[in-house]
Amino acid sequence: MTRPDLVIRSRQAVLPDGTRPAAVVIAGPSIVAVEEYSVAADAVSEVDLGDLALLPGLVDTHVHVNEPGRTGWEGFATATRAAAAGGVTTICDMPLNSLPPTVSVAALAEKRAAAAGQCWVDVAFWGGAVPGNTGSLAALHEAGVVGFKCFLLDSGVPEFPPLDEAELRSAMSVLAGLDATLIVHAEDGAEISSASGRDFGAFVASRPPKAERRAIEKVIRAASATRARAHIVHLSAAECAAMIAGAKGAGIRLSAETCPHYLFFAAEQVPEGATEYKCCPPIRDAINREALWRALEAGVIDCVVSDHSPCLPALKEPETGDFGAAWGGIASLQLGLPAVWTVARRRGRSLDDVIRWMASGPASLASLPAKGQIAVGGDADLVAFDPDASWEVEAAQLFQRHPVTPYLGQKLTGSVRQVWLRGKEISADGEPLGRLLSRGDSAQ
Ligand SMILES: [Zn+2]
Image (cartoon, rainbow, N blue to C red; front, side, top):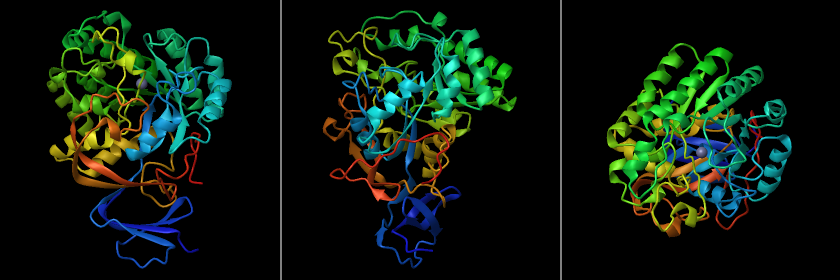
């Protein structure tokens, strides 16, 4: 073996088979060995993290970067810096809110051109499934998207319309043939009423659990009929967990994610007019939150990813404080790990659990085999994490384009200390080292 470039030692290395003291040996961009903590390794450089935990870099499969087209809302440079600061070394960009939406190979090329050279972490791309683009799905798949996203109700932007049930089935039939995953925003518009005003409770009541249930039923029916692989994004209504568990048990290829805000906040605590808490589906009450945690702990929910979806501050926080008028989306790419760890730790969960939910689970969803775990042959994407540090979120710490988030002022436990991307430390005064990934990329 040639001389390794780097050895990182930690007494709490979070490995696929558990947390233990270990030395991770790196050559070029890859992990080449995982050894005993005190192994002699003649590496070019060495880092001993002592009691700091060593995590695989997180994989966040649900990020709206919005560039090109709505770069004033967020962009590749700001989003990927926020990701790096939060211990996220791979993001998968959503196909909507940017212009054009990623619904054709030409649009994917525009997106990749916009991202090139300004990414601080690795970036992969979802394609979109919209009415009329069934014929483009195979070519987008071939071009390397990690899967496809669709909506079952108005997406909030006119250029990314929803699929009806027949269109859902025909898209899923094509995707089953490609063995590609369809990820679905599962709310049923027929169960949603309009809401306005400053009362968060009224907004939550306008989007009841039944709206999620009805939509997930459609997805399960379509997945069962087509044998395609489907994934429910941002599950909020915990009552749907039983249905998802049942479908999984019946051999339907279904998975689900939830988001840090559904696990951290509860509707009861949202102040009047505090539109920074608005997202769809909504943050529900504390009882629902507890049930969501249990579904996650039971393995019914597979991943926790951010659904980072910022916009212009004036759209997010209209002066009226009107929940009907505000943009729905919560920006938390930099904060997901400590937000989830803060609660997980209180519940007696381990970093192994958090890494399964936030790194290896999402990497598997997006078919990125080199990512999400500390394993020989994988990319050396690593995070030094202090699981005991507590701190308060301040706007000045945030790298996202606009520091609007409901986490401001929250006390969190766990702090990211150092991050390596493919063996190189990400440094604020360095260069952006992120690559644009394609589905199935192995370590390079
Ligand atoms: Zn989203």
